[in-house]
Length: 568
Ligand SMILES: *[C@@H]1O[C@H](CO)[C@@H](O)[C@H](O)[C@H]1NC(C)=O
Image (cartoon, rainbow, N blue to C red; front, side, top):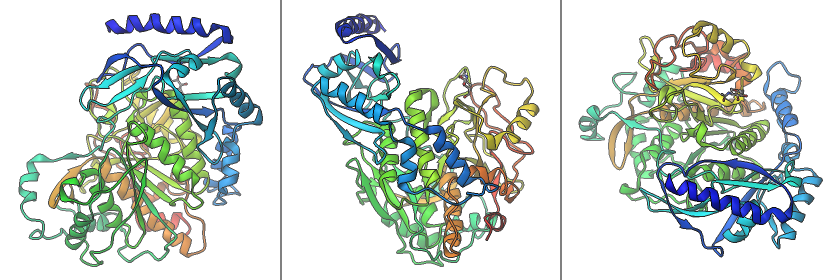
């Protein structure tokens, strides 16, 4: 706190120094470093720094219109997904923007490399000293207390006013990386662990849902077929961050225990990004990654599953990983038709410009026919994980209206909301049109309860839910029940990938961006969950009730009905 005062002076001086370049427009600022980081000192001016710059996109509202046109069942364009080039054209910066930014960089002896097919992200190799001049910034070195990692950040930055309409975000600037809290949203049920760890091979798989959830339980509960998918072009992508690695021996042992009807050699293929890897010794196995591959390979029978391991050598923290991940998929000619991610963050911790940019990138992939699932968080109304709070904390990216957020349930008689299921309303994105009937109904039911604690005009999440408590997995060679919406997102994504397999086999388009379909044609293909609630922030949280609710969304899947809703 003491250092923040000193920093203010440094920033003012540096702004004054760059005054000769013309007026500056403040872009973003924060008062202090993120918690968990300690100021080490000023960064040496010759320290190398790679800046990523998001240029203003030419037509994001055109992209949104195009996305809804191809994703809304009543639209004439439904299912006519955009080509890579057509989708990119909406977000490509105008030539004015490109030349304004390039001449600014050239005047400063710098040049840019394009990071995306659309050219809306560029990267610039520079130094701390030059970045301080360029951005009216004051980069300092900060040390992450628990990992000892060092990062360079500034508490505020600005750009010359003639660039105001051309530059959307510069990174890294004010946003600090997350090394631990933006982590797997998995919790283990410790009381069960001891007993379940005993012996992987001696336990028999439950044929239906008993005290724990298995593939057989999900198959019987949701009517998921066990017959293998047929289309090799239909891919289910699983993303992984933070050195959380999937283990092939664990998957094999999981399949030989819980999917005795398929080959236990069925596995995933590995893709890597940012120096990611997937080491296979038992001690390297990650609970999250094992859960994600076991409940995709284990449920989406016969669907090719890719595990994208995003490393941290060329980025710092999962947020950079999210950006690199979406740009990696956007660069592909044929990205996976279905993608699931069980990582997230508190929305207020993500700079709004960056959040909006990422969300538009999900829209771009959605317009190309990709269904994108994210876990809704494990902290109930306190967001990604449970945390002290005075107002409810929305989760990112669940608040983005162009992704499908998956919440959690437990039990079967009746199936009820699980207490940790993340849910609420975004402060960054307004209520999308596909929610314009069901969300106001929930708000009416809520009345004045929690007024001031949540944003009634925001996008509500989650959209759907599945079981999320006590999933049997094998990790590090041991059987273990785990809980979290991390269980739900892979389960729902597996179901969507099986529907996509049948659609592609029938010569039809894959489902693509799901929400306009889920909230219309498919709404009656989901089982409405009407009990349970998601406590947090010293409240009982929201209650599940008839219709959509910010705990379980529209409800849980019924495969046969979803098939009909998909036109199969
Ligand atoms: C509530 O959401 C709306 C719509 O996204 C937004 O414009 C507004 O700023 C939000 N309010 C707060 C207090 O964040």
